[in-house]
Length: 234
Image 1 (tube, rainbow, N blue to C red):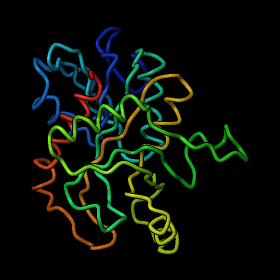
Image 2 (cartoon, helix red, strand yellow):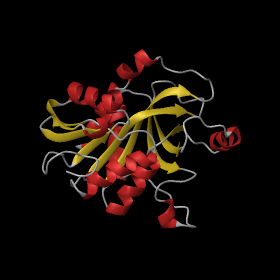
Image 3 (tube, rainbow, N blue to C red):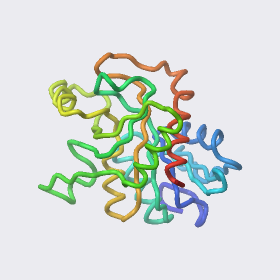
Image 4 (cartoon, one colour):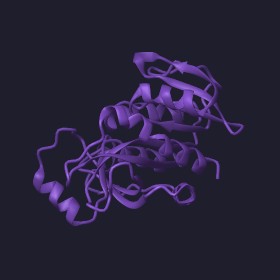
């Protein structure tokens, strides 16, 4: 057990999928894993371990934002031996060609700051995905015929952002989408020498102002989860 994860030694797999929402972790585990067992309920942050095509997998919530994800990712890697961590979550599109329900694979992440900023001080560290995971996820998406975009994303510190000038510059420079966790996940993966990737589903659009109804979001995330699982064990 750790401060934030109540799992016993051996109950967490080396491959961990990390949605932000703990209820999405529960949904994904019950939908895609065989014989899922709840291994964490501390602070309501649900985690489940089961198997997918014979491979052990843990699906564990991260909470919203980089500080929350940093807590769980640190403990999963440091105390439970996680080797592959894949964020599965929603994102807001920042380019017109990126449509609702499309998949975005985050090759690199821009951010104003992360919980790791204090370590780097004046250096602007550029966190990036594990290439083998990225390539495998892209192949899996192409096989499934899912519209998929690969490139840079923006990991924001805030959900209700009022920096229209910053959004305009990110769009101008080709940033595909905005979310709130991947930059710190990639940074921690680099620090610990493990693999990380963010597989994101577009749920709303900063350009067109379109958004998925809440009832449609869960059903639209199935491709994202299956792509993540196929990439992890390619």
